[in-house]
Length: 310
Image 1: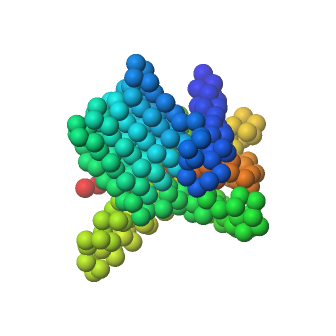
Image 2: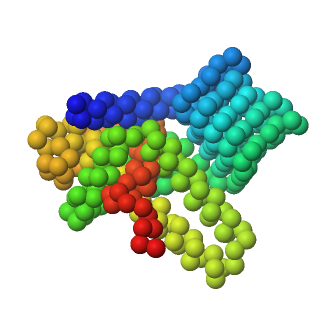
């Protein structure tokens, strides 16, 4: 029964990655084009789960009972959003009937609120931030000529670097990585949104510290934030490799069988996807967010509170 649930969770993760990558294939330009079909929630509609628009705009006139996320597109809100609204690489426009129960985060765009719009949480906008912040090391692939030799060489170099990181982490922390991989299998969607919010929070922290903090104080804090998100990215992405490989290999080579074989198999599978134009960049965007979220969810495989010793 547990094996069946794991298999279904991995299927949903793969479908999420493929769907996101497929949606982005139409968005060849760095931002969503006017003729791309938008994700629309009509006035009498209710979205009970998270809303995700990749490479296109979001138009919400009804109600969203969770978060709304737009990557590489704009958002127009004329209804109710009970969670947070996150826009990366675009603008958000709040109509007079907009009612937001959470926070508004915008990187690489602006927040335009008309008279009557209500936001219960914070509104944070960083117009000069590049949208590639969300993918960290994978970001340079997005927005460049997909078939250029430079992109192919960059992908190959990154895969070689990931091979080294995978071997080192699995050899030294196989049990903890297995716990994080289990989180990937059980909660892929929640981990995706957790990872995305974490990256946005770090990006906003960078912007605030750079603008207001003295160099003597801000530089160490920036180093700590950058190191923390990088560790979570490396750890979580290798855990995604392990989770994917565990489902592709025979059952005896699952999470507790030969983790190095599973991780290398997952790296090979996702590496082949990464080399595909457009599809690879967005797929690894999703992998990065899921990995960071799983690293935070599993406490880097420890499964106990972050500050239990305090």
